[in-house]
Image (cartoon, rainbow, N blue to C red; front, side, top):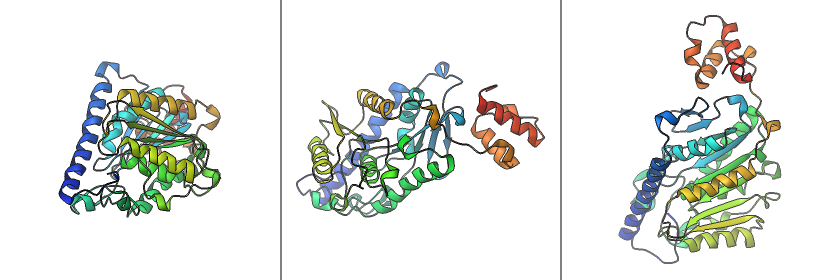
Length: 332
C-alpha cells in the first residue's frame, strides 16, 4: 500500500497488495495471542469495551468519569477495527484514564485490488511514488477522524492537547496526514503515532501553523518489504525539511516485516505515557444523571456495566443514584 521508486506490473501489484493485507492481519493475530489475558486475569477494573453498528470499537475506563485522555487508532488496508482491539485493550490497562476509539474504514473499490472493494481509508492506485500523489477519498477519511476528535471535545470538554492519533500502515498514513493539518493551533494534539506508515499525498500536505512541534513517533520494521524502511525516512525528511515539523522520531526494528511487535507496542506505550501523563484536572465533563432521561440513564448504566445492579429498579431516582455512586467511585 506504499509507494516504492519503481513501477510494478499490475499482476505483481495485486499479489503485493494481498501480501500486505495478509502480513498485517497475521502480525496483529500474533500480537493478540501474546497479550490476550486469561479468564482468571481479568479484573473488575478492566476497561469497558463497546462495539457499534458502524464497526467502531470503543475501549474506555471502567468508570467513564475517570477519562482524561483519548487515543484514536486507525487500522491498515483491508482490516477493520477488530484488528487492533487487543492492542487497544492492552494499552488501556496501562493508561486506565484513556479512552481508545477504533473506527473502521469504509468498504470501497481499491484500484490496486483490480477495483474490487475492501476496507480502505483511500484509494491506492499503484506502488510507485507518482501513484501516491492523489489518494482519492482521503479527504473524506480526514473528516471522519476530525469528527471523532471534534465530537469528543464538544461533548466532554476534553482538550485536543489530551488526544493522540495513531495508526498502522494506511491508518498510520492517515493519522499523520490528518494530525498535522488540523484547522488551527488550538487543535494541536498531544502526539501522533505512525506504525509502518508513510506520508500520503505529499504534494497536498501542508502543516498548519502552530502544529509544527506536535510530537510524532514513527515505528517501522527495517525488513518491511511493502512500506520499505527507506520510505519512513523519506516521509520524515519531507515532513521536517519541507513541512517544518520539529519533533519527528523514527524507531526502526531489525528483522521486523510489515507488522507490529511487542517491542514496538512497548515503545508506543512509553510514548503515550509521556505525552498523555495522568492529569485529573483534564477529566471529562459528563452530563449530570439528574438531568438525564430514563432512556439516557439506562444507556449510561448499560455502558458502565451496571446492568445487573439495575435489575429491579423502577424509579428514575434509583437509576440516578446508581449512576452517581458509580461515577463517584463509592459503590462501583
